[in-house]
Image (cartoon, rainbow, N blue to C red; front, side, top):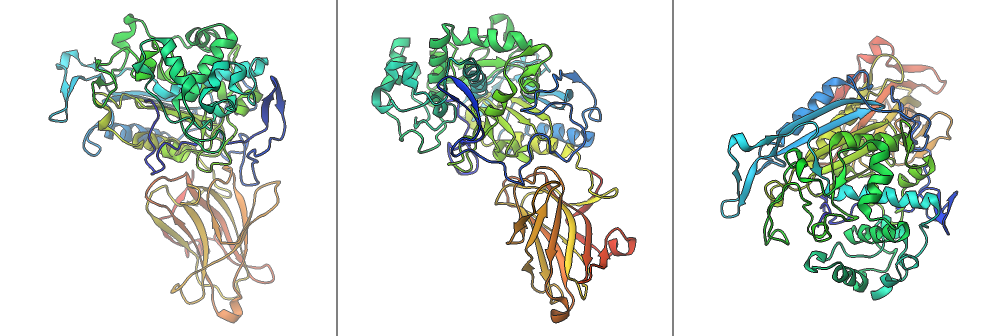
Length: 613
């Protein structure tokens, strides 16, 4: 079973109908789609990062065919100290966290534009010979038989494999042989049993088919028996009514692809993706000669595994993929970090890498478009998950795409900053119960997000809230009589709804505070009201101009203003920046301007810091 469990209490939920590119009757159509996610004035696309650097063309641009090179953090437009912290944080999960290590080892890769600024192995690729259930300990191999992680260590990607199947499907949409809104039965007539006749191809790709999470196909020894189980499966929900992450969706998509192309999935992967892109260490069923270069997974034994296989090393971990001969739409692909970075760069380039093109820019845009707006919190493109803080951390935006794998793998692409992150860990080695949640993925994503600079709106520094969880930080201005209006610049990227920045006023010296409504406006857009006096979510990674009318100063006495930033205990975004603070009187004359040294010195910062980036 390859689905990742969420650590936020929403069970199998992962992330809807967005965008503007659909295949209808085999034709690619670009335009408005009912229920599609429309980017509002606060939602910037790939071109509006508000940060410097970035060499790629964005998800939909396809302008530059940037290829990868190794380089410094500075060359990538990243801050090196935060990449160093990414490695330090990752190494902490090699130790008990809190009881057992989260993984035996990992390979970390981070970059921006065409530059891979970090490619670091940590820990061991093969450490244990077995798992001792009685003592809940791993039986370690002798030191000379353990294998350290290397940059080119190959991993069982588990559910990250779903991205490859999804790309292959969208390629067929481009070619007119597959239509998103067509029923699956148009390609697989036998599929309609059990009330599945109305499930569409799009619902398979967005996990809205109504399928339950999985069924034990591996218990059937023949392909015919496995197909019979799938044909007879009754959906748990009516198609299109719920989001429910299911391996069965991508297994079904595999069968469709094999039917319409006449090629098995492993051949399609090689012909359509890995060979054109030069991903020479990516494939199903790696040969025995690769085994010393592959990270081991689990001591697979009942009851925690469906099969008694002993230490799985060089073969697919997922039971159903194993029962399907190692080639499956939901799991089974093995790869290394550099190859996944090539895939990431290809998609951020708009579907091209060097001289090869595997998708059109419109198709990449389709894959990064939210198709699940009816299911808030479960944003999903075609195959790609979107805006998932539970593993994307502070890299998460409405445009950030990625996926995780049960074995400890993940890939995250952020078009708004042209950044990409690969975290490959063997977290089920020696047993799956040793880890839970996605803390190492979140920590790595937070560090990479912080490594992308945010330049001040004016001058050399801006006030920065930081990125700590479970915190309250305040930025307080002095008492001013006659204050009529606040103006400043604001940049925010927070976990939607849970975290945010609030503008508040006090007329009694700070004893009590009341919300101050304000408007925000980004260049070239109409102002957006914030009647509750708060900003949360994603600002498009650009600076916004804030204007707020203040309480009647002469009637109530001096007014004290503050920005308050609060976060919960779970996840954080990139934080909040405030710059160019000014308070004006009724005639528009400045009573306070932080650009004046004397005024700037009167700002009381608790938790906020001056930051140049």
